[in-house]
Image (cartoon, rainbow, N blue to C red; front, side, top):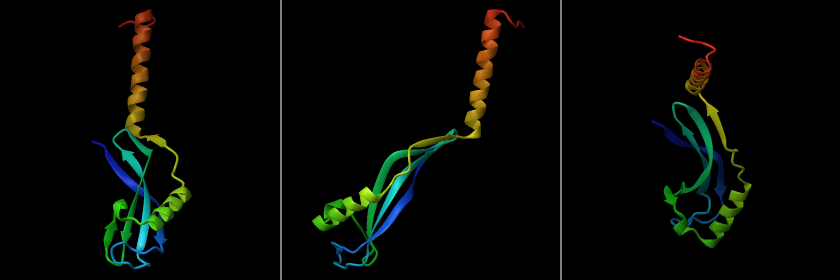
Length: 118
């Protein structure tokens, strides 16, 4: 019913050597943040991820293959990324349910207290 997507926070080209093809101009790291959406709300979570890709050899570079230099550069880039704050936005269907529930509770309280009768 709900879906999760990631949106891009930052893309950075790295001048480090690729551990696969040893080229020093093809590495790019992408930082993403999770966006959750369903019928009632859309929310930005605090969960972030990163993905490194070499465009010369067209390979995904996993953290296991990172050299010490690549790790230092990635840590520096992580500190530079500013994730969006956690937020939640209610959709119209959620507002309809909230208003309906408030009206229903109000009618029940008025009925129980004897203000209205059917």
